Length: 395
Image (cartoon, rainbow, N blue to C red):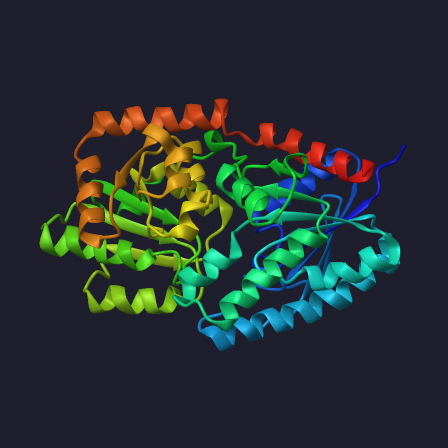
Protein backbone atom coordinates (compact mmCIF):
# COMPACT_ATOMS: atom_id res chain seq x y z
CA UNK A 1 0.00 0.00 0.00
CA UNK A 2 1.50 3.40 -0.97
CA UNK A 3 2.51 5.74 1.81
CA UNK A 4 0.57 9.01 2.25
CA UNK A 5 1.78 12.57 1.81
CA UNK A 6 3.39 14.32 4.78
CA UNK A 7 3.56 18.07 5.44
CA UNK A 8 6.55 19.22 7.52
CA UNK A 9 6.47 22.79 8.87
CA UNK A 10 9.64 24.41 10.21
CA UNK A 11 10.02 28.07 11.08
CA UNK A 12 13.46 28.90 12.45
CA UNK A 13 15.56 27.75 9.46
CA UNK A 14 15.04 27.12 5.75
CA UNK A 15 15.30 23.70 4.16
CA UNK A 16 17.69 22.18 3.19
CA UNK A 17 19.85 24.33 5.50
CA UNK A 18 18.09 22.84 8.55
CA UNK A 19 20.05 19.61 8.58
CA UNK A 20 17.75 17.72 10.98
CA UNK A 21 14.61 18.51 8.97
CA UNK A 22 16.34 17.72 5.70
CA UNK A 23 17.59 14.36 6.99
CA UNK A 24 14.11 13.53 8.27
CA UNK A 25 12.61 14.54 4.93
CA UNK A 26 15.02 12.35 2.99
CA UNK A 27 14.45 9.39 5.33
CA UNK A 28 10.68 9.68 4.89
CA UNK A 29 11.06 10.01 1.12
CA UNK A 30 13.22 6.89 1.04
CA UNK A 31 10.54 5.06 3.04
CA UNK A 32 7.96 5.85 0.36
CA UNK A 33 6.23 8.96 1.73
CA UNK A 34 5.51 12.00 -0.41
CA UNK A 35 7.21 14.80 1.52
CA UNK A 36 6.15 18.46 1.44
CA UNK A 37 8.01 21.08 3.49
CA UNK A 38 6.99 24.62 4.45
CA UNK A 39 9.82 26.86 5.67
CA UNK A 40 10.88 30.53 5.63
CA UNK A 41 12.71 32.44 2.92
CA UNK A 42 16.02 33.30 4.57
CA UNK A 43 19.80 32.81 4.56
CA UNK A 44 20.06 32.56 0.78
CA UNK A 45 17.11 30.19 0.25
CA UNK A 46 14.53 32.50 -1.28
CA UNK A 47 12.81 30.54 -4.07
CA UNK A 48 9.08 30.37 -3.25
CA UNK A 49 8.92 26.77 -4.51
CA UNK A 50 11.56 24.17 -5.17
CA UNK A 51 11.39 20.47 -5.99
CA UNK A 52 14.69 19.22 -4.61
CA UNK A 53 15.70 15.56 -4.60
CA UNK A 54 12.08 14.50 -4.79
CA UNK A 55 10.93 16.77 -1.93
CA UNK A 56 8.48 19.66 -2.41
CA UNK A 57 9.65 22.82 -0.64
CA UNK A 58 7.37 25.85 -0.23
CA UNK A 59 8.88 29.00 1.28
CA UNK A 60 7.23 32.08 2.75
CA UNK A 61 8.38 35.59 3.64
CA UNK A 62 9.34 36.21 7.25
CA UNK A 63 10.36 39.41 9.03
CA UNK A 64 13.93 39.86 10.21
CA UNK A 65 15.19 37.36 12.79
CA UNK A 66 14.10 38.36 16.27
CA UNK A 67 16.26 40.48 18.50
CA UNK A 68 14.06 41.98 21.23
CA UNK A 69 10.58 40.93 22.28
CA UNK A 70 8.80 43.05 19.66
CA UNK A 71 10.98 41.59 16.92
CA UNK A 72 10.27 38.14 18.34
CA UNK A 73 6.50 38.70 18.06
CA UNK A 74 6.77 40.22 14.59
CA UNK A 75 8.81 37.32 13.33
CA UNK A 76 6.31 34.76 14.59
CA UNK A 77 3.26 36.67 13.33
CA UNK A 78 4.66 36.95 9.80
CA UNK A 79 5.72 33.31 9.84
CA UNK A 80 2.31 32.06 10.99
CA UNK A 81 0.57 33.94 8.21
CA UNK A 82 2.93 32.46 5.59
CA UNK A 83 2.63 28.96 7.03
CA UNK A 84 -1.16 29.15 7.16
CA UNK A 85 -1.75 30.04 3.53
CA UNK A 86 0.99 27.73 2.24
CA UNK A 87 -0.50 24.84 4.26
CA UNK A 88 -3.82 25.30 2.47
CA UNK A 89 -2.01 25.53 -0.86
CA UNK A 90 -0.18 22.29 -0.04
CA UNK A 91 -3.46 20.66 0.99
CA UNK A 92 -5.04 21.42 -2.39
CA UNK A 93 -2.05 19.98 -4.22
CA UNK A 94 -0.96 17.04 -2.07
CA UNK A 95 -3.79 16.02 0.32
CA UNK A 96 -1.36 15.19 3.15
CA UNK A 97 -2.49 12.86 5.96
CA UNK A 98 0.18 13.85 8.50
CA UNK A 99 1.41 17.26 9.64
CA UNK A 100 4.87 17.20 11.22
CA UNK A 101 5.44 20.35 13.33
CA UNK A 102 9.02 21.39 14.13
CA UNK A 103 9.42 23.93 16.92
CA UNK A 104 10.38 26.58 17.93
CA UNK A 105 7.97 28.21 18.37
CA UNK A 106 5.16 26.18 19.90
CA UNK A 107 2.61 28.17 17.90
CA UNK A 108 2.40 25.89 14.88
CA UNK A 109 -0.60 24.10 16.37
CA UNK A 110 -2.57 27.12 15.10
CA UNK A 111 -1.75 26.02 11.54
CA UNK A 112 -2.37 22.31 12.11
CA UNK A 113 -5.54 22.52 14.20
CA UNK A 114 -8.05 23.17 11.33
CA UNK A 115 -6.74 20.19 9.35
CA UNK A 116 -7.10 17.85 12.31
CA UNK A 117 -10.58 19.17 13.08
CA UNK A 118 -11.90 19.12 9.51
CA UNK A 119 -10.05 16.19 7.93
CA UNK A 120 -8.73 14.05 10.77
CA UNK A 121 -5.11 14.81 9.84
CA UNK A 122 -2.61 13.24 12.23
CA UNK A 123 -0.11 15.52 13.99
CA UNK A 124 3.50 14.83 14.99
CA UNK A 125 5.26 17.28 17.32
CA UNK A 126 9.02 17.34 16.63
CA UNK A 127 10.56 19.02 19.68
CA UNK A 128 13.75 20.69 18.53
CA UNK A 129 13.85 23.01 21.56
CA UNK A 130 12.06 23.17 24.90
CA UNK A 131 10.45 26.52 24.13
CA UNK A 132 9.57 27.89 27.61
CA UNK A 133 13.17 27.38 28.75
CA UNK A 134 14.36 28.96 25.49
CA UNK A 135 12.14 32.01 26.08
CA UNK A 136 13.38 32.42 29.64
CA UNK A 137 17.04 32.07 28.61
CA UNK A 138 16.59 34.62 25.83
CA UNK A 139 14.58 37.28 27.69
CA UNK A 140 15.37 36.52 31.36
CA UNK A 141 11.76 36.94 32.44
CA UNK A 142 8.79 35.03 33.78
CA UNK A 143 5.83 37.27 33.02
CA UNK A 144 2.58 37.07 31.09
CA UNK A 145 4.43 36.32 27.86
CA UNK A 146 6.28 33.42 29.51
CA UNK A 147 3.04 31.86 30.72
CA UNK A 148 1.59 32.35 27.25
CA UNK A 149 4.54 30.33 25.93
CA UNK A 150 3.80 27.61 28.49
CA UNK A 151 0.15 27.54 27.36
CA UNK A 152 1.17 27.26 23.69
CA UNK A 153 3.45 24.34 24.55
CA UNK A 154 0.63 22.56 26.37
CA UNK A 155 -1.81 23.09 23.49
CA UNK A 156 0.73 21.70 21.02
CA UNK A 157 1.18 18.56 23.09
CA UNK A 158 -2.60 18.19 23.37
CA UNK A 159 -3.01 18.40 19.60
CA UNK A 160 -0.16 16.00 18.79
CA UNK A 161 -0.76 12.28 18.32
CA UNK A 162 2.91 11.49 18.94
CA UNK A 163 6.02 13.50 19.81
CA UNK A 164 9.64 13.23 18.69
CA UNK A 165 12.28 14.16 21.28
CA UNK A 166 15.90 14.92 20.49
CA UNK A 167 17.14 13.30 23.72
CA UNK A 168 16.05 11.77 27.02
CA UNK A 169 15.80 15.14 28.79
CA UNK A 170 13.33 16.40 26.21
CA UNK A 171 11.43 13.10 26.38
CA UNK A 172 11.06 13.59 30.11
CA UNK A 173 9.51 17.02 29.51
CA UNK A 174 7.08 15.52 26.99
CA UNK A 175 6.01 12.89 29.53
CA UNK A 176 5.85 15.08 32.61
CA UNK A 177 4.85 18.54 31.41
CA UNK A 178 3.33 17.55 28.09
CA UNK A 179 1.20 14.76 29.51
CA UNK A 180 2.13 12.27 26.77
CA UNK A 181 2.19 8.53 27.36
CA UNK A 182 5.49 6.62 27.04
CA UNK A 183 4.39 4.90 23.81
CA UNK A 184 3.62 8.32 22.29
CA UNK A 185 7.15 9.77 22.56
CA UNK A 186 10.07 8.61 20.40
CA UNK A 187 13.70 9.71 20.71
CA UNK A 188 14.94 10.82 17.30
CA UNK A 189 18.37 12.25 17.95
CA UNK A 190 19.91 14.98 15.87
CA UNK A 191 22.98 13.41 14.30
CA UNK A 192 25.24 14.49 11.45
CA UNK A 193 25.42 12.44 8.29
CA UNK A 194 28.61 13.77 6.76
CA UNK A 195 31.18 12.02 4.60
CA UNK A 196 34.01 13.72 6.48
CA UNK A 197 36.69 11.79 4.60
CA UNK A 198 35.85 13.66 1.39
CA UNK A 199 37.35 16.89 2.71
CA UNK A 200 40.98 17.79 3.36
CA UNK A 201 42.39 20.32 5.85
CA UNK A 202 43.29 23.78 4.55
CA UNK A 203 46.32 25.16 6.43
CA UNK A 204 45.60 28.64 5.02
CA UNK A 205 42.70 28.95 7.46
CA UNK A 206 45.24 29.07 10.32
CA UNK A 207 46.68 32.36 9.00
CA UNK A 208 50.27 31.15 9.63
CA UNK A 209 49.51 30.30 13.25
CA UNK A 210 50.02 26.97 14.97
CA UNK A 211 46.47 26.37 16.22
CA UNK A 212 42.94 26.94 14.92
CA UNK A 213 39.94 27.06 17.28
CA UNK A 214 36.56 26.72 15.60
CA UNK A 215 32.88 27.40 16.24
CA UNK A 216 29.92 26.59 14.01
CA UNK A 217 26.32 27.46 14.71
CA UNK A 218 23.70 30.12 15.29
CA UNK A 219 24.76 33.46 16.69
CA UNK A 220 21.88 34.62 18.88
CA UNK A 221 21.89 36.04 22.37
CA UNK A 222 21.04 32.60 23.83
CA UNK A 223 23.99 30.88 22.12
CA UNK A 224 26.81 32.41 24.15
CA UNK A 225 29.14 33.22 21.25
CA UNK A 226 30.16 36.42 23.03
CA UNK A 227 31.82 34.21 25.67
CA UNK A 228 34.05 32.75 22.98
CA UNK A 229 34.96 36.22 21.65
CA UNK A 230 35.84 37.25 25.21
CA UNK A 231 37.75 33.98 25.67
CA UNK A 232 39.77 34.77 22.55
CA UNK A 233 40.66 38.15 24.10
CA UNK A 234 41.72 36.37 27.30
CA UNK A 235 43.90 33.96 25.32
CA UNK A 236 45.52 36.54 23.03
CA UNK A 237 45.74 39.65 25.20
CA UNK A 238 45.80 38.36 28.80
CA UNK A 239 47.65 35.08 28.29
CA UNK A 240 49.80 36.48 25.48
CA UNK A 241 49.22 33.57 23.12
CA UNK A 242 49.71 34.82 19.59
CA UNK A 243 49.88 31.29 18.15
CA UNK A 244 46.09 30.78 18.14
CA UNK A 245 43.67 31.70 15.35
CA UNK A 246 39.87 31.64 15.76
CA UNK A 247 37.25 30.89 13.10
CA UNK A 248 33.61 31.42 14.11
CA UNK A 249 31.22 30.30 11.37
CA UNK A 250 27.51 31.04 11.28
CA UNK A 251 25.11 33.92 11.40
CA UNK A 252 22.15 35.16 13.40
CA UNK A 253 20.78 38.25 15.15
CA UNK A 254 24.00 38.80 17.15
CA UNK A 255 26.51 38.45 14.30
CA UNK A 256 27.00 42.18 13.70
CA UNK A 257 27.37 42.96 17.39
CA UNK A 258 29.92 40.15 17.71
CA UNK A 259 31.95 41.68 14.87
CA UNK A 260 31.81 45.03 16.69
CA UNK A 261 32.90 43.42 19.95
CA UNK A 262 35.79 41.67 18.20
CA UNK A 263 36.94 45.00 16.76
CA UNK A 264 36.61 46.77 20.12
CA UNK A 265 38.88 44.12 21.63
CA UNK A 266 41.45 44.49 18.84
CA UNK A 267 41.12 40.90 17.65
CA UNK A 268 40.68 41.54 13.92
CA UNK A 269 43.89 39.69 13.06
CA UNK A 270 43.12 36.71 15.29
CA UNK A 271 39.38 36.10 14.94
CA UNK A 272 37.46 35.57 11.69
CA UNK A 273 33.65 35.88 11.55
CA UNK A 274 32.78 35.06 7.92
CA UNK A 275 29.03 34.67 8.53
CA UNK A 276 27.17 31.99 6.63
CA UNK A 277 29.54 29.69 4.73
CA UNK A 278 29.09 26.94 2.16
CA UNK A 279 29.06 23.30 3.20
CA UNK A 280 32.38 22.82 1.41
CA UNK A 281 33.99 25.63 3.41
CA UNK A 282 32.41 24.40 6.65
CA UNK A 283 33.53 20.80 6.26
CA UNK A 284 37.02 21.85 5.19
CA UNK A 285 37.24 24.09 8.25
CA UNK A 286 36.07 21.27 10.53
CA UNK A 287 38.87 19.12 9.15
CA UNK A 288 41.35 21.92 9.84
CA UNK A 289 40.49 23.02 13.38
CA UNK A 290 42.42 21.68 16.34
CA UNK A 291 39.64 22.29 18.90
CA UNK A 292 35.94 23.00 18.55
CA UNK A 293 33.98 25.09 21.06
CA UNK A 294 30.36 24.90 22.21
CA UNK A 295 29.87 28.07 24.28
CA UNK A 296 26.17 27.76 25.11
CA UNK A 297 25.87 29.08 28.68
CA UNK A 298 24.79 26.89 31.58
CA UNK A 299 21.03 27.22 32.09
CA UNK A 300 17.88 25.09 32.16
CA UNK A 301 17.31 25.54 28.43
CA UNK A 302 20.75 24.40 27.32
CA UNK A 303 20.63 21.48 29.76
CA UNK A 304 17.88 20.05 27.51
CA UNK A 305 19.62 20.70 24.18
CA UNK A 306 21.62 18.36 21.99
CA UNK A 307 23.80 20.80 20.07
CA UNK A 308 24.47 20.12 16.40
CA UNK A 309 27.94 21.63 16.65
CA UNK A 310 28.95 19.19 19.39
CA UNK A 311 28.02 16.25 17.17
CA UNK A 312 29.67 17.78 14.11
CA UNK A 313 32.97 18.22 15.93
CA UNK A 314 32.74 14.57 16.97
CA UNK A 315 31.94 13.40 13.43
CA UNK A 316 35.16 15.03 12.25
CA UNK A 317 37.17 13.54 15.11
CA UNK A 318 37.82 16.87 16.82
CA UNK A 319 38.03 17.39 20.58
CA UNK A 320 36.00 20.21 22.04
CA UNK A 321 35.53 22.48 25.01
CA UNK A 322 32.06 23.29 26.31
CA UNK A 323 30.30 24.68 29.31
CA UNK A 324 29.08 21.81 31.47
CA UNK A 325 25.46 21.37 30.36
CA UNK A 326 23.70 18.05 30.88
CA UNK A 327 22.92 16.92 27.33
CA UNK A 328 26.21 18.28 26.06
CA UNK A 329 28.02 16.02 28.50
CA UNK A 330 25.82 13.07 27.52
CA UNK A 331 26.56 13.59 23.81
CA UNK A 332 30.30 14.24 24.00
CA UNK A 333 31.26 12.06 26.97
CA UNK A 334 35.03 11.80 27.16
CA UNK A 335 35.41 13.59 23.82
CA UNK A 336 35.18 17.01 25.51
CA UNK A 337 36.65 19.11 28.27
CA UNK A 338 34.01 20.74 30.47
CA UNK A 339 34.03 24.23 32.00
CA UNK A 340 32.13 24.18 35.32
CA UNK A 341 30.74 27.72 35.16
CA UNK A 342 29.82 30.22 32.47
CA UNK A 343 33.04 32.23 32.41
CA UNK A 344 34.95 33.52 29.38
CA UNK A 345 38.27 33.36 31.24
CA UNK A 346 37.74 29.76 32.33
CA UNK A 347 36.65 28.89 28.81
CA UNK A 348 39.85 30.41 27.42
CA UNK A 349 42.02 28.57 29.94
CA UNK A 350 40.36 25.24 29.08
CA UNK A 351 40.95 25.85 25.36
CA UNK A 352 44.64 26.51 25.99
CA UNK A 353 45.00 23.41 28.16
CA UNK A 354 43.64 21.29 25.36
CA UNK A 355 45.69 23.00 22.66
CA UNK A 356 48.82 22.32 24.70
CA UNK A 357 48.04 18.61 25.08
CA UNK A 358 48.17 17.02 21.59
CA UNK A 359 47.93 13.48 22.98
CA UNK A 360 44.66 14.33 24.75
CA UNK A 361 43.33 15.95 21.58
CA UNK A 362 44.07 12.85 19.55
CA UNK A 363 42.49 10.54 22.13
CA UNK A 364 39.38 12.68 22.57
CA UNK A 365 38.89 13.07 18.83
CA UNK A 366 38.96 9.31 18.38
CA UNK A 367 36.45 8.82 21.19
CA UNK A 368 34.09 11.32 19.60
CA UNK A 369 34.29 9.71 16.18
CA UNK A 370 33.59 6.28 17.66
CA UNK A 371 30.59 7.57 19.65
CA UNK A 372 29.05 9.03 16.52
CA UNK A 373 29.63 5.82 14.59
CA UNK A 374 28.56 3.35 17.28
CA UNK A 375 26.01 5.13 19.48
CA UNK A 376 24.72 8.43 18.12
CA UNK A 377 24.61 7.89 14.37
CA UNK A 378 21.64 8.97 12.26
CA UNK A 379 20.74 5.44 11.13
CA UNK A 380 19.59 4.58 14.66
CA UNK A 381 17.29 7.58 14.72
CA UNK A 382 15.77 6.80 11.33
CA UNK A 383 14.33 3.58 12.73
CA UNK A 384 12.67 5.53 15.54
CA UNK A 385 11.34 8.14 13.13
CA UNK A 386 9.71 5.54 10.90
CA UNK A 387 8.31 3.71 13.91
CA UNK A 388 6.65 6.94 15.10
CA UNK A 389 5.02 7.34 11.70
CA UNK A 390 3.73 3.78 11.77
CA UNK A 391 2.20 4.36 15.21
CA UNK A 392 0.48 7.57 14.19
CA UNK A 393 -0.97 6.00 11.03
CA UNK A 394 -2.27 3.02 13.00
CA UNK A 395 -3.90 5.22 15.66
